Image 1 (cartoon, rainbow, N blue to C red):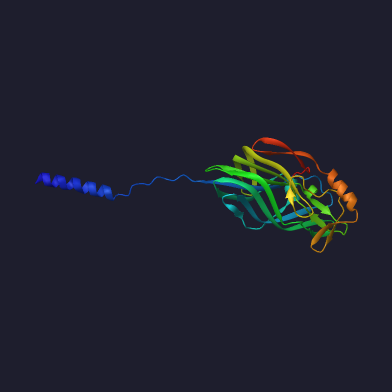
Image 2: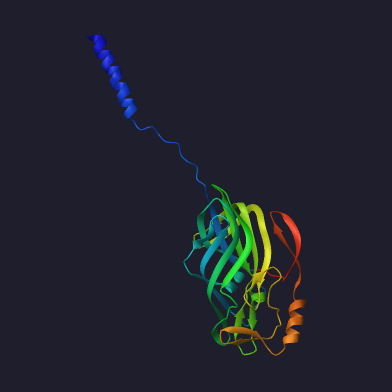
Length: 265
């Protein structure tokens, strides 16, 4: 009888053990953190006291994922305030799928300039600022993307009294970065491996790339929705070429000579 009870008890223990749910293996995350920031290192803008840019969305692109929206919340930044504070501020802080993204895009909807005569809406050759540069996302690490606008190279005053913003940007990406996002939205990038470093500009037709920009003294007019060269066309072309100087871009630590407009943000 005791033997039967012992066997029954053993069978009960085995049955209960089988019913207990066994812990499943935790799958490691394949996402990585990416922090996008904006700043401005422009020189003195004299009469202009405020230059506000509204960014509607931020997107990245890879061959496998296509365009991925990382922020669709419109945010407005005063570039001259950033310059005065010497600070970087947050565009977006997001978890992205592991991989290498080859392009980053800002969609800019509005630009307002404040000078001694009040507030003015500036024209944009294009609201799409698309920059070619690698953003490497690895699991459980942080990458940083910085748009450093050079306001004094980007802003132009036309012959008919209007402002034009053709962005000139110093663009950098870092992987394995040490990034601190503070409560007030300011960002400090303390370390990381430099992946992309490039200067880009926008021309009168809205094209963006290395070596593109509108010359500092080019004569411009706004005709309806279009931006055109003014009367000094020959002079403008010559000055535009003179304003283009030799610079370098760096991708993955490899430096190559390129032609670009000197840009800082």
